Length: 166
Length: 328
Image (cartoon, rainbow over all chains, first blue to last red):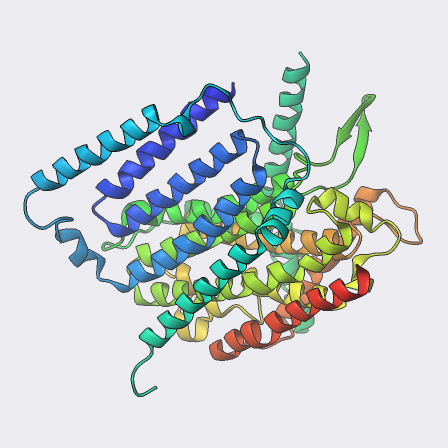
């Protein structure tokens, strides 16, 4: 039953991801991206990581996508729908896409890291506790450094967005 | 056989839950109008049925038979999708909400919740955050200035108030040492959390008022300056979807207040069935929502933002620090 659900959600994720790229209307793309994130969080549930699934919804679907939409709603969507995604012909893009695809397939099939020989045992117990000790005890310094970088980026964005006179 | 039985039980619970959530707005609209009437020294609806009891049914028939108008320049797909997006998250949240421990029906112990998630509280906040999409798409798709302005306001408000709301319940999680709502209620069997977490409850309830788009924070539908906010262009059954979703959120904030701060189904003094205690407490909070609506004026938009970021957020952080120092 798990495999069936996995196929369902994976297919959903791929279809919605394609929609993100192919939809002409940026708002429809954003909607498809949101649906894609939901499928991925469902896959997290199948992997017995409910905490990660919820955090995925919380952060990506609930927060980041809303900001995306804010930006999209500021631009003139009707204008944007008439513009081509890439200027010029599609041939160079196609070649690049093929190269990237071949590269990723090669990585997945020849790298030892992605071998499916031994499935990762689901770790039971209190996942919240495990994650918090990992973040706030084992890797405290990298975590804090990452937060400070994010804060600096935020402050930078505000400074850039402010008008000169303000 | 066991699996089939369990699946059937879940299906029955979900069907009951959906029926309850869809039907509850009917008595709630009647109550709201009655309470409004009596607070303003008039009778409220009186014409249809005894003391207007059938008024919600009449309203429902009216909404069902009204023309379902879609503006000419609207994005038709998103315009149709938005009411569903607004309705789905509040319903999904109730999967993780416990209404009590167990009851025995026909010699079988049946739990009064669909699922006891160990990350239930986080799940509730994550899914309720999705509510904002119905608002964004609804406002944007209608291609009307009032609707877009209303939806931008609502989004900014919901995002701003989600943060203090999430911070306010951290104190509760610290006390219960768990994010499971069932565990949180069990941890309150001796003394309710409101005793330890008065600031937390204050922040949570005020943010809840804002999240449910109720007065004094219903800036989204400030009819004086915005028409009706993000659902200006909606009519008929699609408008009813937004209405139902608003009432379900009011119910949800009341239920969460009871579970997180007022001991859930734990009673005091009078020995009543746990489920009845729970329902009574929830009913009280729904009444408080309506009471506020007809006694308080609406805030200005800049005041609303200032309250969220400059008052509630620092208060909720202070609450976490105080809880951390005092109880660990």
